Length: 145
Image (cartoon, rainbow, N blue to C red):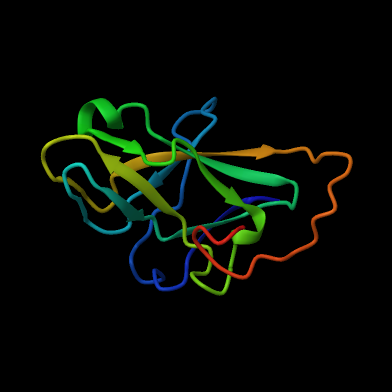
């Protein structure tokens, strides 16, 4: 099972759940939850108001939409966002997915609520034979060691 829900604090914000735009699209488009200003040559977090649930051996990878760098001058600051299955409903932020972008232009960029900004793709992943990690996530954004 995998899917999306509205994160705590965004229940009354008319959040659009991520969706694929065509039958053969791999990615689920993520929408901006609130107008956000990204200062020139700066990194900012864009709220989506979304959390994602998935199986324990899955990950949600977040990519910038392909048109955004050319049209808006924004790139993902970390190239690919990784949302682990244990990020869902964590105590720090309920698993709220934020899109970390870098403004590569000389001007501030404003992204508007309900604008499509990124896309997410669910994937299975494999573990090494000698993997014995058993620690638990205790925080939100950027909290894994």
